[in-house]
Amino acid sequence: MLFRSIGVDFSSKTLDMKNGKVIKIQLWDTAGQEQYSSIIKSYFRDPVGCIIVLDITNSNETILKQLKKWEKRVLESSDNREYMKILVLINKIDMEDAVFKQKDINETIKYCEDKKYLVYETSCKRSLNIYESLYDFTYSIYDSISDKIDNTKIKGRSEEHTSEL
Image 1 (cartoon, helix red, strand yellow):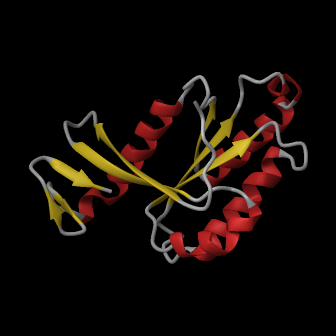
Image 2: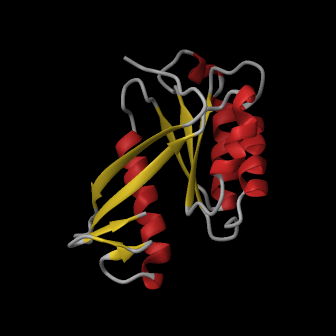
Image 3: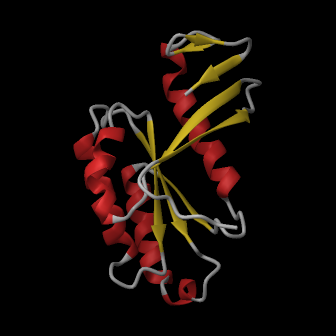
């Protein structure tokens, strides 16, 4: 069963990285509804990464327009924008709309590549590219900050062979 976020939701996940490290990540889902935009801003302080999920079935905006709107919100609200990694998930590619949106999807992918954002076509419903995108994103963040941390600690917490992002 799938649930929509209302306001803000939090979860954590542990990933085994290819370098032997175990990384615990925190995910803050800030829901895309406009009515929650005022509380979302308080969650954008100093993130090391941001995942933007785009809905190809949204008939009100092109996929690229959705991305630019969220990109602007995230970058304007973050104190860490020059170092923050961005993952873009073009979601619901299993829907019939995907066939008719291929030009828009390709345009969005090109934009992401030019900006050096990680980008994946996904289906949350079918778990298509969800784990792979999260793993690659986490590794990208870890790789970019690993020289700033020791082997076992980030933000003062330590566990044997575990780092927390």
